[in-house]
Length: 304
Ligand code: GLN
Image 1 (tube, rainbow, N blue to C red):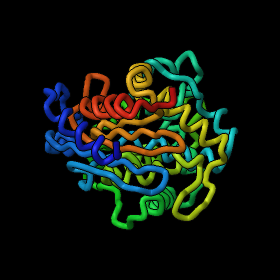
Image 2 (image 1 turned 60 degrees about the vertical axis):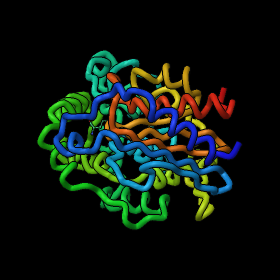
Image 3 (image 1 turned 45 degrees about the vertical axis):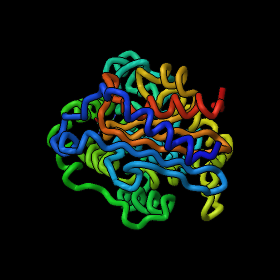
């Protein structure tokens, strides 16, 4: 069966399910989103694009951005990265503080908020204008100059970001944040506010299905080993305390965001992005997970 037929039938089947999730409501901008939106985009490794539903509509990628900042820093400083952040699953909520105390301010992995804040700190230390660098990097991977930060979302995150502020200050008390906490938070809130479509997202993540190569420019951005490690991190930590369940049901590395986006990678085969804003209790898109479980079941192909 063709991928287009497969995603069409999954789309229709998932739409019949009662969507048990709820839209993120910690900032008004995310709460305002139409909760019925649902899109799927898949790009195979021969650059064929397949999509259905609201796959051409942009949304807030939120925590999915953490994979991209981590890839940038990993490519820049290599394995020195692991002195600042770990590579173990956390088994805790994305915004949890608890493990930091007994692990001396070294976050368990780069995809929980604590770890992403350390990566944001490294972005500030390694780039003169990290916001411009990050945006350009994404525009280049997506081949879409229209991708941008959403200022309103970023400002709103700032106004409500008390827990992230607590995290960054707490980590700084262990000397694992080198820049000013407000600058780190500013970059972090902007990186989370980036908006793009499922089609853009599937394209951007091709880097991870091509062993670190950017297909368009043929630039080897990550070494094959670094790419393997990025995919391993997504497998173990991409869904916080639901990473085990995602592995169990879907069997692909992936990453979610509270905007309702989910992206998954089948190395050497395809990337797939799903958007549906209603989230389950763990903060992951309900339809997103239902869609991806069906995809790997119907195609009888996952990394396992
Ligand atoms: N901006 C959100 C936060 O920091 C991102 C969380 C997420 O997508 N899981 O809380």
